[in-house]
Structures are given as structure tokens and as C-alpha cells.
Length: 250
Image (cartoon, rainbow, N blue to C red; front, side, top):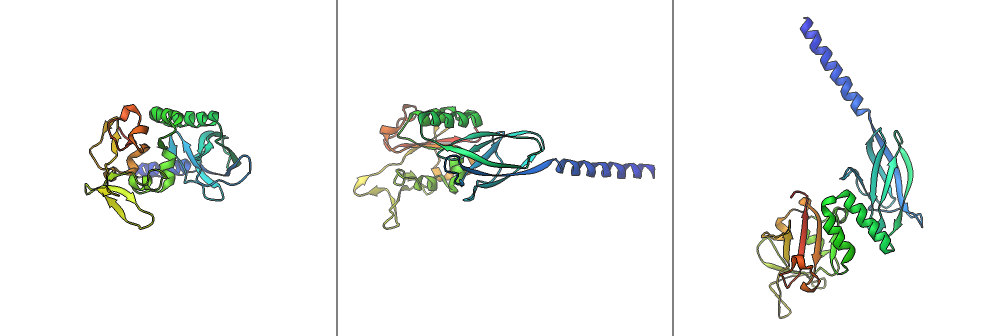
């Protein structure tokens, strides 16, 4: 009988501990807005310890974060805006408006890259190229998440300047994009000219898989260069452009 009572006591103490740990969480609310115009900003994302912690804001700019009761430092990112580091005091639940400044100068772009490297140290080379190259297309982690694309090829097709880049599809055929006027997909030859597929690189090595065989959920960031003339020498070798993938796992 005493042994049975001891078991019940342990269970009761465990339940109290669970309730206590749950009680330590708090919901923090606020709004993200343009610091100049005061206009609410959609598509702002929030990071804590290199991890996204909330859904992107909608048109009203409102957000909710679930945090512990201790002081927290979060990063607020939004494309075309300078990211901001925000300290949330212990116990605070409504932090009002977070103002973000539009990217306008080279100094602003430098801050964007610095904060990007702070969040993702492994993307140092990615952000360095993004800061110095003007002819490449760069998709940071928040860009990929914001796009809502299900496949990497969909993300490229949504990007001006890359819509007609030729890719190898799952069937091994050459897909050279969608003609917006006719809604048809070209393969192989187009307009009497020979088309060829862009090379795909991952982890510093040319990949053997087609782009659609690589899950977008496994990709942290992506670079795309539409022609050999715009491709960095580190990835040269294809006359049809290059796609560089930065994977979440090495």
C-alpha cells in the first residue's frame, strides 16, 4: 500500500511540473510597419536562435509569437527592408509597432547581408556574392519560404528573367519554360535554336539529379545565373547558366 501511494505522489508531482512548464510560455503580439510611412507590412518573418518562430505577417502586419517569460532577442526580416534585431523584455506581451527601414543604399544592403550571415553563418559566401554581383538571382531562406512554391522549378518560373531558363524535368526531358501567351511548355528545341539545360550545383559539386528531384524543403538558399556570361568562375562550365543550391543538411 505505501508503495502505491508513492507512485501516485510521483505522478501528481509530474503533472504539476508539466503545468508549470506550460505556464512559462507567453504570447507576444505587435505590428510590423514601414518606419517612414507607417504602412503595415505583409510577409515579415521572425527568427529566434536561427529558427523561424511564427507565420509571416499578413496585410495588417500583425503577429503573434510564443516565447518563454525570460528576455528574448528576435530578428525581424522582410524583403527589400533592413532587418531589425528586437529585444523583448521579460514578461512583455504587447510590444507595439516594429518599424523597418526600406533598403535604399549600399550601406543598407551591407546590413542586410551582415544580419543574414548572423542568422546563417554557413551562407557567408552566398551573401558575399549577393552583395557584389548584380546579374545573379538570389533566394535567401525567407525568400524561399515567402514564395510558397512547392518545387524549385516553380520558384524559378515565377522570377522575371528566369522564366525561360531550360531545366531537366523528372522524365529527363528538357523544359524551357512556359509561354505565357499560349500556356504551353517547350521541350528540346525552341524557335529553331538548340536549347540546353542549366547546370545544377549543390555542396560545391555539380548535381546529377534534376531540379524537381530535390525537395524544396531541403534547400536553405539558392542562386541562379541565367547565362554563362553571368556565372561566377567557381561554377563555370555550362554555356546555359547555373543554379547553385545551399542545402539545409550538408
